[in-house]
Image (cartoon, rainbow, N blue to C red; front, top):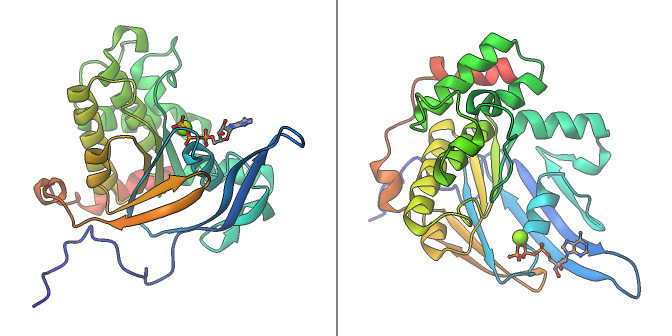
Length: 269
Ligand SMILES: Nc1ncnc2c1ncn2[C@@H]1O[C@H](COP(=O)(O)OP(=O)(O)OP(=O)(O)O)[C@@H](O)[C@H]1O
Ligand SMILES: [Mg+2]
């Protein structure tokens, strides 16, 4: 008998194809004789709402892959396409727009603007996208509240703990209701317990928003929360593991009604 599939389980083949598709990606930094072949032919498909952990030793190409997928860096050869559209064929302005509206980013640390309060840091993607200021602040306030930061909106990053600052960064990544969240070792600078809480917040938030999550991590337990783990070795994917859904998702509340989140996406796009 086949066990019932929970709603977060990745479809073996997404019904409308993957949202993000990397094909034969290579990346060479520098030029001969000091070239670094950081990626040597990577194929990857990411379905809507899917969670993927990227693991591997230092220097194996994880960050490079993340940056190529997000259109931050251009590949040396190969293609990355977003809903069937090659990122390389887009204008810089369109790529920037795509990054702002469809992608959210969480990095290890140091990504918040130190002079801005948490609320404005979280609202930044909306303000940059030209959303009305009071609407931006309201959406950012709601997102901070969902991440347990109510009451801390006016604190600057230097007045927050490392875990709180990462939650602000997660709020900022989520505030524009992105389709994909890219996170590069988001808990790498935190102690184990705080890192666990922050990762859980990230995973829960992505799930509730229906966003795909691509997270680079050195922590196998964090990877276990993701539906798929790919391991990078020397610029190539050396292993793909599909996880059984864990109890984390089973404990999560169902997504809120579209009236709450649909409005956010509509406003940001
Ligand atoms: N801007 C750059 N210029 C030259 N070489 C680079 C550059 N960025 C990365 N590299 C090299 O490319 C390879 C892959 O780097 P990458 O940052 O993708 O690794 P990583 O798996 O993220 O490592 P880590 O776990 O240490 O963050 C490494 O050999 C690195 O030295
Ligand atoms: Mg890295």
